Image (cartoon, rainbow, N blue to C red):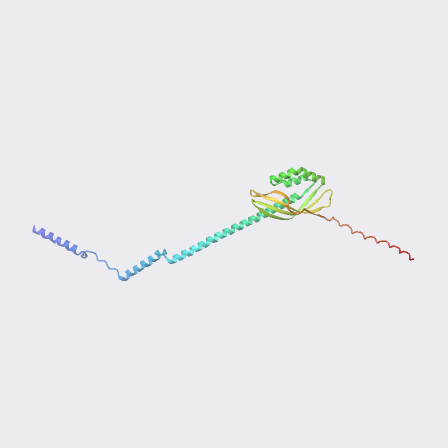
Length: 253
């Protein structure tokens, strides 16, 4: 009985000593050197400062700003180029439309000025081809009257376009002023006469094409000026006036 009691007492004493001095059984860790600790703190402060400013790396931030400026300049340049390109395309289209309209008005003016009593039907087929229904109807309604005038007076006519001036109107319409020479002759006046006239040709956009919709004298224009063409051969010069015969002097008294 006494032996077991002594052993238990020794175990109790050892347990109490361990509890009183835990450093004897804990692992010993080397302490950090003072210089390394200070440098770690400084590095932490340096890393935290750009983060607080939103800049992780000043060099990278500068490159990002430069890249953003380049991109912004490129985008502005592209938008400017696109606007200029659009304007150039619109101007080219306008010029192409003007050229097309001018040529169409010129060709139609020549049709309207070219006819002959020998084949009046050819004239009506020509001026009714490719025009608007309204303009074609005008010619159809006037065919009988105009044909009778051509046949009775034996009229022939030809034209020469001098210039065209297309003026754009709202709604895809052009008013083209055509200045021309018209040479006519008839039964009463077989000698050709030239008239300087102004015509106004209306051209409309129909789908993707252009179409003549009206023609007539230019409003406010002066009446045609007729010019007599010289004959093929010049007339002979006029004979000199005869010299009057001398009179006898009266006798003296």
